[in-house]
Length: 504
Ligand code: GLC
Image (cartoon, rainbow, N blue to C red; front, side, top):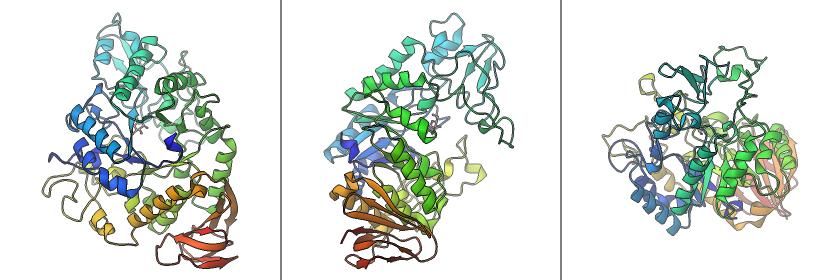
């Protein structure tokens, strides 16, 4: 199970590397950057959807699960990418989107054609306009009225993303076959999208109001999604997907849920996901007490045999360096890469990228996520090495000073820090496998032990702070020569500084 020691790197293909001059990244571009990723020291890349799609939700609206969208290339490009990754020792994880398709998918076209269609029941059609009070994640009613057949279809996301009916055995079989198609092409695992959503209440009971909500009434958060997400029966679908994925391939699942619900997605006897994403670091208060409490609650809730995992950023969330501030970005990186479990690193976070201002005229995402999807800056040139100079990138770039080339030449850059942390992690049994134990959480510092011999101290404030540890310094986030310093009971940390020490 390589993923227990591995680090997963999320590539958003639209934003990684353009090679065909359209300002949109493509699969050949990713293949051309494999050496960069191998050198960074990650173990796997997770590619967000590159399948045929009208791109209403930038690939999460799929019109053919087994074809590459022309804007990303061809199946041959995909095969070449997998071969290049494997040759460099990297695994490839694909996004699998079971909950919905595009409304242009042939299945939905057939389903919509008439009430008698053989595929009518492949989607969720009901009488009424709307049939109940359910609200879409992106806002507004989750039902779209179809004049021609006099019924509404359910969509958890955009109206153009109709939800599949996973209670229909033909749908299950057809979707599980998609996993088989990609396994046969040599991929190493799947990240399963919107896992909690795949089944909804067959009685269509109204979702209850969220009492704390004071915003607009048609927003997703105005209701508690009791009858649309995380139904107990979802575990049957998780088990079916796990059976198809098997044990030689990784099964990561997108599960946004409180810890006690999240850990159910591991299953208890090999019928759950290997890694249900733990998103809680995305929302935790950036204070030592809150982080220690989160880590302890998560560790305690893990079922026997379950392997933990941590996430600090992804294509749906503001960038970590924007959330916690540039002064904390290094401590955040050290935290992510030294907690127990598999980390997922979002492309560009290794450079400390921040959210990019997107003027209203350039906004393209239906849910405000453009700022964290700005293309990867490889150089400081006008096209940032992402696309040719003079080509308009699909989203604007940020600060030209923040780029890979610049950081490659700076031995103390964020990139250098990530390489160092990833290399250390790979060579440290304590960091790979050692138990987690909080040593101190207060006074602005978080200190924890990993295994018998390694401690991590993080100053989560903008003031100097003292960590109660002893031993010798292995590395610090500043990469500025503190290695070997001997600490006797108190380690003075600069603002936002982190240090890894070995027990003396
Ligand atoms: C997941 C994806 C997100 C997408 C949604 C609908 O949350 O991460 O980007 O919009 O599912 O597929």
